[in-house]
Length: 604
Image (tube, rainbow, N blue to C red; front, side, top):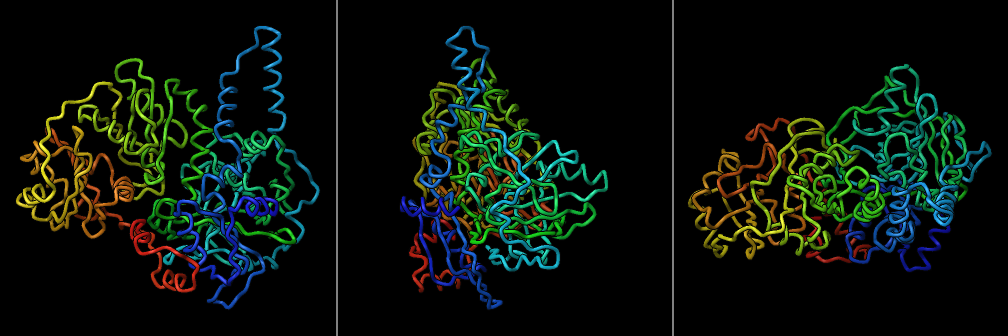
């Protein structure tokens, strides 16, 4: 970690803040704004404080280490080259001659560093140790990132577990709520690997060992987020990328092995019978997740280096670190996805689509309904099964990351005849569906090469608004996008009264010569000139089977907040909004330097 900080300094990728900064909101708000800048940097806070308890910490806090493309490259190296090498492995075939044998040996030689080494010697992470009653999590500068969070949360911990027989090791990243000086609540979502392991211990009525590492080589942190199949240890990727074996040492009070150079390690056991209410927490969807019971870790030891660095992140509305964390994941795991979907050429999960809420997919079309086949393949593959909305294009489509070009291409080929509605699991953090962790899915097939007929008569916004208000008085404002395509998009701000939007949409069929794709949003939350945040709001707020209405030529999408009016019986979550007083205080002290336009655009 210290070497990494030196590299940040050498590459002008680090801001050092020596002023005392509160771990409650202030630190997270500074990082939240910094990562949204075009050329954001990592942040090192050298004087963390807790103003509420008048407490000073001698452990610096490092944030935003994945906050830009340059930072990701510094940590992982050439991502495209890594993906290319993994693709070579997936295409490995027995050699036919001596020359191919030499190439095969070279490829296999590169795998010699994949498997971690284990040692029972002490590591750097165990230079300072506290056990049992001496453990005090409050001595760590653990952040409270959002005003309505239930407590302080560890947000960048590598959580290490192993199966009951010790044969399967797992590393994951989960938020961890501080419950007491020696207890953490583990946010183990229903579909995650740790829950599978936890269920083994639960059935055997045994306590489950868990160790949490913070810091060390930053690549450990990325590996903990990698969506490897169950049973493959995530630190295999570390060895493959670093070309050196991950050095693991045994925890002091449980059998779990953790990286020898982690900055901080929290060890303990989970009693399968001990749960506590976790949350609320402002999560990466940009909304607070509800209070729910999760397992509790009883900490048996806290160890750290002599001079540790505490690593943290903040999640909320995009763009954030997960934008840059997601890029290597996309590139490196593309070759692995291609083994189950050979005609898959590329895919892109936009950060303002919150990754699992929207995916764009490019395929080589070989036969009718090929796109639908790949839809089902992706919806049944690992964490891709969480994807709610998938749009498919053919091999001639432009770069998936060129938002204007790819949007135009899609709208030139969009047809309501080529929609596939389905149902399945979704991320446990998804709040839009009526049920828990399952809901509607939508696949859109835009792979046809020919464009659809353009028969829309586009009206000026004010004239169209006037016509729409005559039919639906609740409509407050509109804004049309992509009017030169056969499927213009109309963004509609509405102030709902006593009628659900899905009942109103068919009434607009009378204007079908002027309308094609409609998105309804609450006028009080709509910035109609901001398509980046409109996309974030839409894909977060809909369930495809409940909120989409199709008439003869129009498709209408209800992206408003839901409630009893729509038969939604849960509480619609609050958004992660920064505390205005904290923002103003930080601006006056010169700790953030953005104007009101910046704050408004990202709905901070």
